[in-house]
Length: 380
Image 1: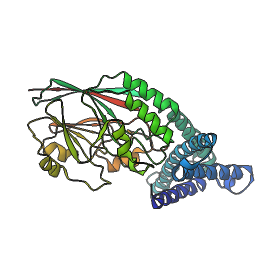
Image 2: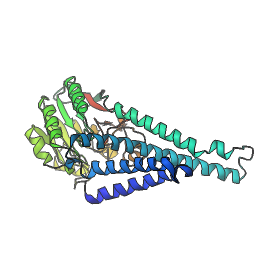
Image 3: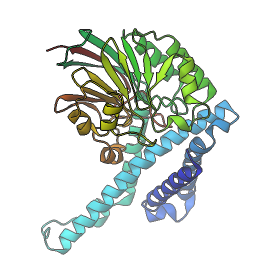
Image 4: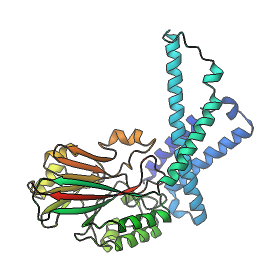
């Protein structure tokens, strides 16, 4: 990630932190041990987050990395949830008093100290936020295999095709040994004809040992029709040549390219929008794709799904969203056409996976971590 992006993120984090801090009761922040505790809590949390995304790879001690990641994760989730709850409190309170002032709620009398007590709200919000963070902290390791059975009414050289879709591993600070072990165990349970890597396998915090561990997992996969990868929006920020890493492991990198698998099934791998890329109509024309034969699309972000369906694509597969996670869905839902699952777009199916992990932080809730097994049947 560029220094400019890191700076903007830190500015946003500091802004949210100040909003939370001044949302606490006045007597908490005006002096005493509570104030010192809150300052240490917020300052250490912001510092941990800054270290994760600026110099995580340069931290010399493993125990310090362990501490930074765990505290940074906890602070980020608690901070996001606390901010959301305090904003809701502010909006509700303003709306209530505006209605009272307008005479819409004259019969309702509420004692200020009983109903709007900041001490009660602050304690409740912190307990709730820490509770959800702890649940998501452990829930992310509960990787599932999600099964989809779909039919494409086009004749192909094979009657069916098994696909394993893996996305958003974010190998680095958001992964622990258990993440890789569980992923390896789940992959072994799926006998796939082709493996598709939907981007963000790496990110800014990826270390050489993470690359080695991912390589070990790839070495154990031997799909009949090969393994294919498309870039995510974080992969290329890591140190090292991503394409060379996958090439050494026999993984084909698709950059707005199409390949034919299983005789006549066309697989189109699209570049992420952060790179200079072609539109779907241009790709169909450039690669002379036959719309009478199955066309499968692998792309990191669930974008242009309606456009894909209109040009004759049969299945779109993507990740990026990390599923329906509280409170992240508030932002990701605005910029993505789908958050999670499977949906029909005319004659095309679109599948979005919640992914294996998360960016920089070890948290998922209520979404689960997953790999996706897709069984496709062909024919009229």
